Length: 415
Image (cartoon, rainbow, N blue to C red; front, side):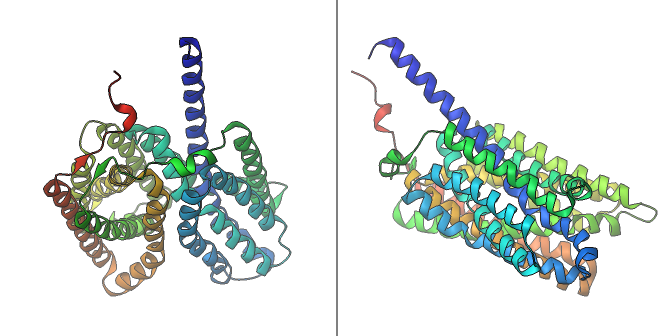
């Protein structure tokens, strides 16, 4: 092949990679945004349907169950068929489901549309992460920025939804406008991102670093504990944070100040995610994973007895570690999992993480009723301690097993 043609081909491949990563970043933000629409819209539905909040919020239960449950078949289908097709289904499926919510004539139909929304939203994490790892080569800063995009979706959901619901379009417009955006992105994605069906059968079935069979089984067994504990810790602190600040900061602090301080704590998490992403490019991910989770445990232990601004500092450490461990944890999986299996492995990881959300709220309620947030935070320390123990076990397995580094065939020197 002439040099010019080779350069043109490399340039087109690089453009396709950048384009694919850009769509994946947008998709992560949308994934978390669409799940946050109904919890805000429901406030206005109380007056529309003359129902209580407790009656209406339960309609979203199926959505969140589907969001965790359907990540399993989504990862399997992506590995067996086409990851690009699955991501197109994510955009278009979310768009159609949101449109269904907007035109739902009854609350029953609204619940059905929300269930479908959760089902299509479940596609992103197992499929999108596998695609992002493949496209970026597990580059730390790329994974970190993608994580921040997801956090941005969470942050914008309530505010944007409130504005749309307050407009002339009403609460239905809060679903309809994002529906149009999702459908437009789905069409653009199909038009601008190349088909990948030819890659399905050729994906490597050997991990970058190969562990012995027994070590690999122990590794992934520990990762199930890590995934559940990480999700439970994250969901507990996210749900409880505003109320912890309100109760433990001291008297005379208004609601706006509580909200502002909680936002600052969340911002620490986003900044930490970017920092950890860059560090992970220079430090072995499994070692960095242990350091970050160690900070999580230390911050949780500190928060048990802290009050005033020391409490804010302790919670900032917890939040920074929680967001940081997501990025470095995904990198660890990427190193020890073959590309052909990543969709399924990420599906299990995120299924366990999201399933923990259903445990977090009743656990918070049960502990708070018996010992206030002192007991909630002690429980957080216990879970983060188990999390740290599992990570240290993983580090020991990787270190002792002395895995063999696999060199891709195309990396061999030319003769």
